[in-house]
Length: 268
Image 1: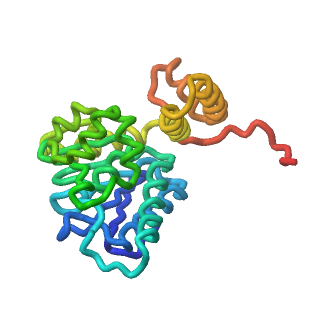
Image 2: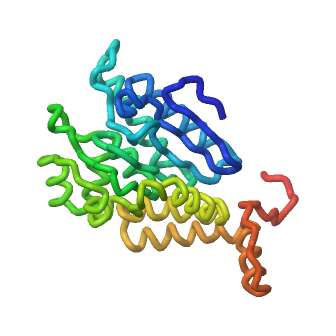
Image 3: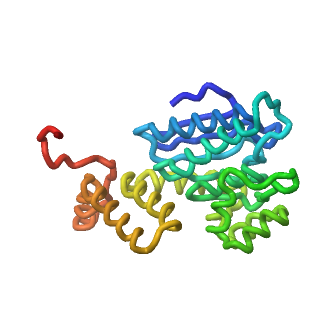
């Protein structure tokens, strides 16, 4: 995949792709073109058959300070919101696991980028804040959907209506950070999680992620039905029999996400 914009740097290590928000002079705040580029990059990852894990991080000492309010505006604000919403939808709907590697500040839409990820690995020096009302704004990039589901309605209101910076330990206590590590351990911890995910069965991981994301907004019966459909898909991969064989032989399975062809007859 190629992104023709230095606002977002893309690096690949096997099946692991890293997107780096690359505007350190403004704490990686994204202008209008930056949100468009982020959407492009995420859609490119989604269509990459070799991508197994995505890491999102920020250049320099910060993750992301949200939208660059000082950036030049040439179009109506609704156009900017469409670009932002496109990036948010692409991130939430990405079928592969996503890890946010957070140090420094993650505020406003920058924090909500991290909340859209499946795992958040934060440096113990990281700080988080829903700073929208300080700018005369209300939350965007999915914050009003994510926060009540993650922390409950009252805590979500506290974080958004009385916004204050919280440290990584409090964010973890609220369930908004998966791991808090020492700054010098941040890269190695992210790499370890990425490697573990890369070694997992890609189809089963994608199905699990989709089920978890949809389950919070569905009934128990609907969740059971969705789980049944997902298992049928999993049973048709080469990974399920590979896992069973590895269990029986006490070996480590190699998961590829390959499909088992049950028939060579042409589709009607």
